Image (tube, rainbow, N blue to C red; front, top):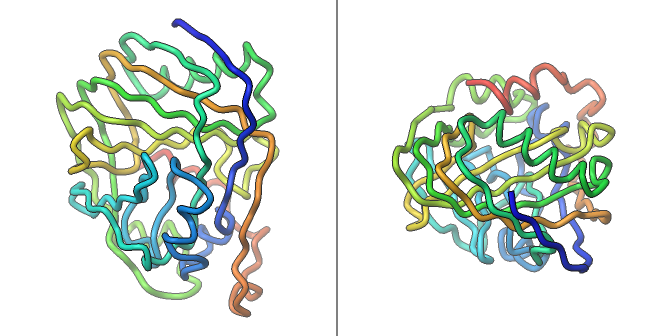
Amino acid sequence: MEFKQTDNGVKMYQVSTLQALALGYTKSVIDVQELRKHGDTGLGTYEGVDGEMIMVNGHCYRAKDDGAVEEVADDMGVPFSSVCKLEGRREFQMGYIESVDELKKQLNNLIEEHFGLNSMHMVRIDGDFELVDARSESGYFAMHVTLKDMLDITQKAFCFEEVEGTLICVYYPDYMDGINAAGWHFHFISKDCTKGGHVFDIKMNKGKGRMDKISQIEIQLPSEPGFDTYALKSASKDEIKSVEQGK
């Protein structure tokens, strides 16, 4: 893996918390127009968990429940997201990656070498993929229905083969578990921006990455009274892990 680094400062902007989303707070907190003021790269979801968000090159895309992707309008509601203005402080080349676990291992080694395990990271990897195993979902508009229960109803899985595209990779350290998912979270969009989703597994032939270590975060919490009816500490870590990592 080749590697080079420059010095720049980057801030993560997050909408709401994963605890709130996991417990079913899926109302719009801000819209896409506001989100795009704070970043050009990131991931998240839309009001009612109506598809997976992939933000790349300043554009917000929605992966629908069949894996097809569309660019969304600025007035689309956002209940949860993590974005930044990617500067690409670190660049690296990757060879063949046989699984998402191997990708996580290599990315962990990369940030550990530069003392980053307690920081957040945003990574963009443009690559040539043999396989992308992914999911997305349709909207489910209800209060206090957990994310796991929603996805049990609405989630659909699909695979893309022999495709060029981009992985958006977000890392949060363990001590921030609940604010976001601890560890790595991956979303994919094809080079032609026609297909994508939340990533379960990959096989990548080669890729070129850009990474930023992030030591600042701004969190926009919901302002409407309903948010305060959720006991956020009761969010199940096991359910969050199953939603993030399992079908």
